Structures are given as structure tokens and as C-alpha cells.
Image (cartoon, rainbow, N blue to C red; front, side, top):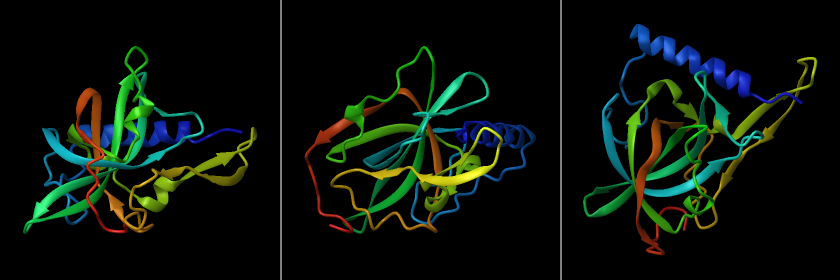
Length: 188
């Protein structure tokens, strides 16, 4: 069974080409998220909500790079209350660099991530949730559900039509701020 690694590589390369040509606008397409800051490293805080469990374990890029994908609940303070906006994080690493440890995927941990906005990889929760499959002849097979919400994470935030703004994170560009500091949030 072929998976969508070739499709992912193709989409990634198309995004790179469009970025180089300056075709993709830098505007944020989802309300309530971090302001657009394409190409500039920013800091965001929150918790991991879900991981994307590709059949190959990760997506492969065009230059030997690899990607792990997750949904992160970005927390921002509005009028003395926390607002949580789901965003897509693509953790980009090379063969010689570490993948994210299993301990990263713990919704009880509060993180600070240092990321770069990348509008070319924005996608809906619906699209992110399924991996297309085909047989050895290229004939389409049933898609596999690959979005895995973490235990304790609010699941009602991940509506199928929601567009997730995408951010790229590199190795060692995150830190744990606290653990088990669970505040009641939406869906609890």
C-alpha cells in the first residue's frame, strides 16, 4: 500500500515554489490566532491537543527533511480569560536531528514554542484527519483516520471545517513551562 508521502512531498515543493515566487499572501485565515508574522520567529504558549499519526510516522520533505505534525492549543489572554485557538505545528527535522520525544505528546504539559508562520501549509481539520491510500497500481483505497486527540485535551475544538493556521518548529525550539496545571477550558 502506498501512502501519501509522495503527495505530501509534492504539496510541500509546490508551497516552496509559490513562496519563492511570492504568490502566497501572509494573511492569517483563521480568527483568534497569533497575528501573521510570516518568516519571523515568534513565541506561542499552550498545550498539545492532538497528534497526526502518519502511517510512515512522519512526512518527508524535498531536501531530506522530515515533518511530525500536531495540533496545538494556542492560549491567549482576552479580557482576563484564556482563549484557546487550535493551530497546526509542523515539526521540521533532518535525519541527524531528534524527532519529538513521546513525552512531548502530553496534554498536561504547558509549553512555549518558538515557531515561524507558514501559510502555505494551512489546512482544515478534516483534511488533516485522513491519509489517502492507494494500492501498488495507484488505485485509490479507503483513507485512514490519523488524527489522534490526546487524553485530557478538549475534543470539541477540532471541528472538521476549521482552518488551522500552520507554523513550523525546529528541534530544541520549545520548552516545558509547567506540568499538571490544568485549567478548565472549553469542552471540559
